[in-house]
Amino acid sequence: MPNSPGTEWWSSVLKEALVKKLDYDELSNCMRCGFCQPACPTFRETGYEAASPRGRIALMKAVADGVMEPDKDFIDQMNLCLGCRACEPVCPAGVPYGQLIEQTREAIEEVQEHPWWVKAVRKLAFFHLFPHQKHMYRLGGLLRFYQRSGVQKVLRKLGVLSILPKQMREMEAIMPEASGRGIVDFFGGTVIPAVGERKYRVGMFHGCIMDVLFNETNRNTVRLLSEAGCEVIIAPDQVCCGALHAHSGEREQARNLARKNVAAFHKADVDIIVSNAGGCGAMLLEYNHLLEKDAEWKEKAHWFASRVKDISEILALLVEPKEWQSLPQRITYQSSCHLRNGMKVTKEPVSLLQAIPGATYVQLREGDRCCGSAGIYNLVQSEMAGSLLDEKMDHVAATQADILVTSNPGCLLQMKAGIHRAGLEGKMEAVHIVDLLARVQQKEKPLSIPE
Image (cartoon, rainbow, N blue to C red; front, top):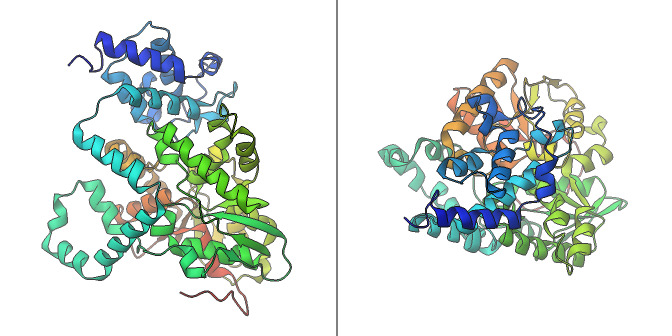
């Protein structure tokens, strides 16, 4: 094909796209020291130089410089990257690898020709589903019907789901109960008052998937914030954060979503913007970089990014653990890559878990290593994701924990799948940190919210 990877036309166009998209100065800042390699999950799994951040940066630069023809192997290596950004904290030169891989994928997406069905799925998901919360709620309603009507039980009993790929079957098996209503419907409004004296006016980012598959976590987030003295504002015009778009080469659509969110929360005039999903929070925090070249939105994007905090940062500052109920169980923690490497939040989740009365906190070996979820990575790169998950679950099982805690929806689903896969069901549960803290919180008169 004249426009397939490796042809002269395709290589020339991709080179031009890379030169246009890539921050060449940052490419050149890589010192080739190799400190990133032990931190990189794909390098550790394969041992290939090209599968390391240093190797991928070298490939990007070689194509941009015109000394290498981009081919299918080039694209495969860019797609094999989890985007976990574990390489960034250990890089002595401070190279923003996460931005470079997103810029490269944007350039590839601009040139690459997908099969018709891939085009259709991408268009449906990235442009007609995730950006429109009403569509997400409709999807949530359909999933809820599937789960509660008996259809799910019948299909499982008949073995119809066996036609699905293994990874999708595992995800279906542990899919949480969906909701066709968002938290605004549950709370009956967009402003939830603080219990007692107001300390902060907090804008809550409810997310697109979070408000459908993890609606209870969102409700618990609002409860905890309100009872900690925060007036919670749920900006009605907020949309998807754009993380999945940016990671998949649709950065222009990510910018469109960023502008809408910046406008929504700027209008709400909040002190803090809180996220309870590490992947979303990291994306929100980088709106200033995403819109840096947009003169109209640059200043507001900086205003927005300067206010983004993870829920654990706020709760660690405001809550009183001495009021919590005792939980005499063993707890371990799987860190969210984007919470740790993107938002730089590491101490607060652990300090909150260690403060739970009666609980025994157990350190998870390599708890800071990616679990293989990485957005939709576990679906599109199932072999690598499965390998990472199996090793992760070996470490999890060794903790003999009763509760496995994480702070990101993708990680939570991956951990639930891992528990199912490792035969640990009935021995261990995976829980979002917000839901665990809501469980141990003790109040005489809890915030009255319809269930």
